[in-house]
Amino acid sequence: MRVQFESDSEPAVLALRKCYSPDPGCQGIIRDICLLCTRYHITPRWEHILSSFNDVADALSHNHFPQAQVHFAEEFGGRVLSLVA
Image (cartoon, rainbow, N blue to C red; front, top):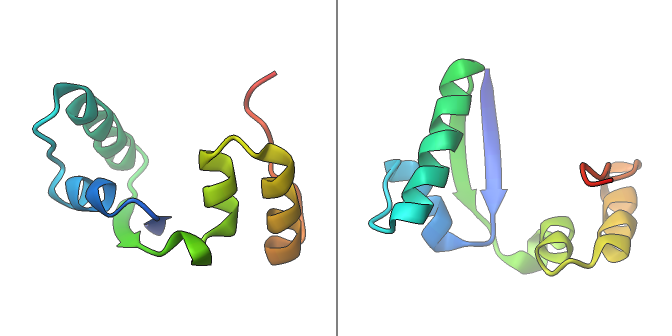
């Protein structure tokens, strides 16, 4: 399965494309993401997009969950589900 992941963090996209970061903490996260993609047979495509075109992710990255819900409903017609109780 092919999945396109979009992020407004260009350094993160570049690190994920290479599956490498010189920072040990980031490298651990990248390794886990790459392992999950392999486990679930996902061929990832990492794309950088400007935060102005990614309202939902931008709101979530700033912990503005209600604003993210509004943007998500406008764009996708549904609700963002919280994984945190």
